[in-house]
Image (cartoon, rainbow, N blue to C red; front, side, top):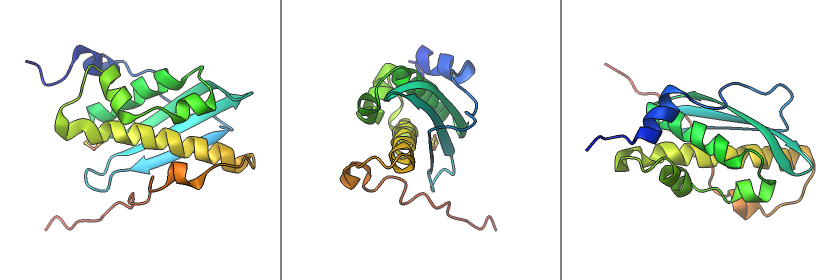
Length: 147
Ligand code: FES
């Protein structure tokens, strides 16, 4: 059996929503300190609806496919619907990821959550801080000597 599903390969080869949004309403960036991959999500939000979403991912194929699928899943959705997106749902929508690549889909969930938090912060919208507890806190890129 192939390691990656056809959907993963499709979203890796033809990623949707790549790019940046100027004057985005929310921006979220996360990194994984172990693999060094970085994901940045930009949101345009009008009347509580995500009208546009773009991503920049410096990372592996699974991270790119996860970013692409996750952005497709939240486009046109409300802020509260987007907050419910889980990495599990992203991985399922991709017809699965290998176990050692599941963390790539976690980056997508976390980058979206941080972009939504940024939107709340920029607009002075009250929210339960617990919703974002722990996200992005261990993202410092650890420098390793290669000698
Ligand atoms: Fe780290 Fe894919 S290997 S995000």
